[in-house]
Length: 140
Image (cartoon, rainbow, N blue to C red; front, side):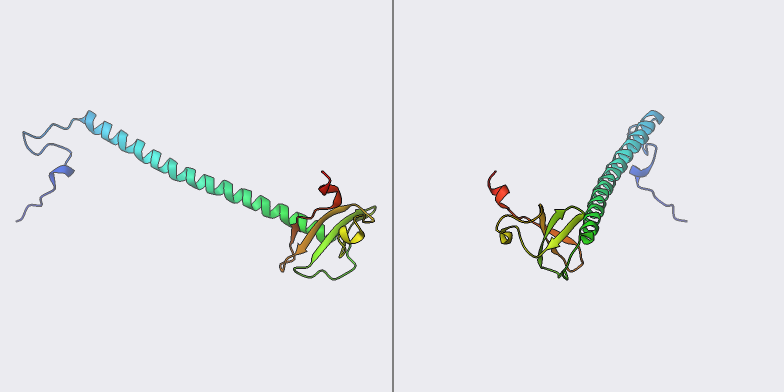
């Protein structure tokens, strides 16, 4: 009958009289060190996941804010068919906002109502604001 031979480094006791004695205190310290190491490793992984969750939450909030703004822009009065890629101009007057195809410059720098911004509608019907300088912003 063949005896199974375990590697000596996996044993919890010395295998020869010359090997150092392994005490219960040493074993307890080893277990405590292993637990601490595992806890730190797990904490590090959970911290990475927590950062990813925060980043996703922030991204979701931005998406919802953009969606709210897009909905508000779609509520603006418009006397023409909005087309994807077309630049349109938002103005405010009593009773609400409206879109125009005419920029403040095309009104000779003096539009009939306060200019609120320039936009293009994307194929998904969301809006992208376009930087637009009026005479007033040039004079600052």
